[in-house]
Length: 185
Image (cartoon, rainbow, N blue to C red):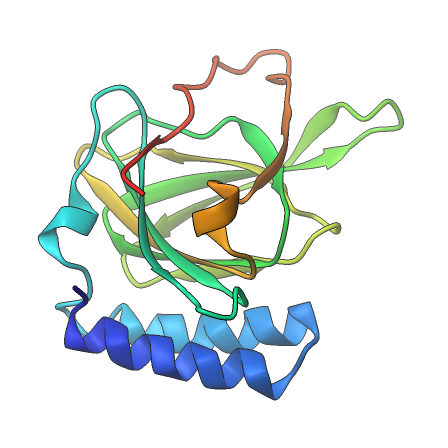
């Protein structure tokens, strides 16, 4: 079951992905729709906001019947993070609650990730990426409380299980990651 706001958002995303096949255009358009959704309040059901103790938790909220996109909530306890990774498809992320730090990387000539930038995203902020350009990153909850983010992926995450294409070794000087997500779906 979904909230009314999420059902409306799904209808909006269906129209947006149908309107233009280009991944960059889809991601930019979905980012604007997600920004609006984040301000609606009652967006996720309680079961889509539950964390896990052993790593960030992924909840599959919706998979488009035509496999054009998926909506996932990621729930993070303080300190939980992803590995350094890239993606199988375009991705739009909006922070619903808490604070997330995103560290972006560029690959050097040997394919080793080198930190490019760091951003801190709080509730209401949205970012997006389109592979293969500039999509290597790590995300972590660097706040004191629970963080919840909504991710829209341009793939069927129900079938794939994840949007991660490749995991990279931790760059020298960074802490080891807190593991892969616990998934309910």
